Length: 397
Image (cartoon, rainbow, N blue to C red; front, side, top):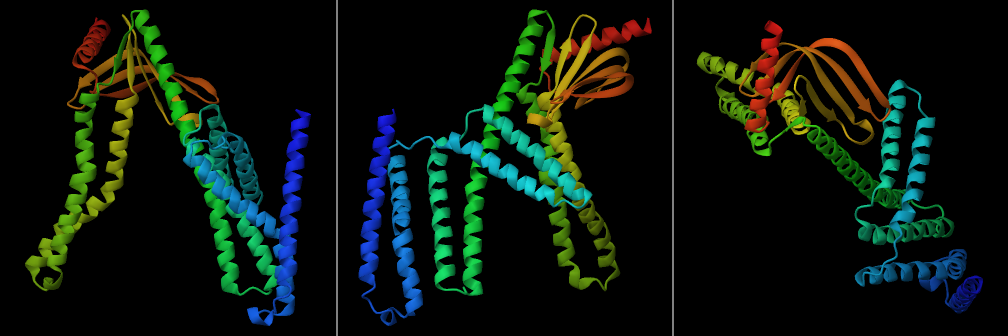
């Protein structure tokens, strides 16, 4: 092993000596070219020749590395650098966030730092899962790094040779380097976050499947959402948010635009009032309707009911990764229930147990009304209604 390393170092040293010898010879030959013919002063031309001899082999190596990276990618023989670079990028990101937090002066700055810290922890947890887009990153990361080095070297050469640089040239260099560095950091971080999110989601779904299997083996009836019934359940909020609300806004705006130049007539002014009110209502209700649609979508997707002979557990979760909060409502006493067109309302005394990444907690018995979307299969919904009917009859007796 030591011999191989020595041979590699010897080959690398020989290549470096030959490369510098060639560029030094070329630089000496360039000294015979008159500087005035190139439109440069003697000092500028000397600096360019010095940088050509000093950085020429490095430029050549970087260009060759970029070409070889694309050739290896075309042959599907690119080295796996994505996993090795992952930790380095996380460390750089952590240092940048720490530097940003060190300048915090207000409460909003500290809140922003807290959110950034949570995002960094989620990225750190994503290292447990396989990285998405490895082939892309195996090409993107080396090429991005080589380009960044080329830009920094070029900036150094221009600063020394053509000092002082014009403002436009300085701004162009700064923008290009910042953009390259940003592009060098963002795609790996985004792909890492996606990998972590998908891996954590698959792990959580597997955990819920195991919980369901264990409950079924214990003769517990498990009620879960039926996808077809869920589509019908989401039809109304989807239409309200994406069709009715924009449609009312556009129609009202069209009527107001048509009657804009006829406002001297009393009938037109009276006609514009309801359309103006409708347009304002549509604008203000758009966000609440989107939130209602999102709430219906999330609740109907994650809800699960466990039914035993005399016990009801309503479970679900919100959020994902480190922000996921799982909850379980246990029915202690049923006071009333109501069957609506879209949901089943269960009113009674419950205990609530929550669990998140930081631990679990349980709330003392309290009175609450649960709204269960009617997205369960028909047979499971009938079993739930039969259970509620029996519980109500027992409480009456």
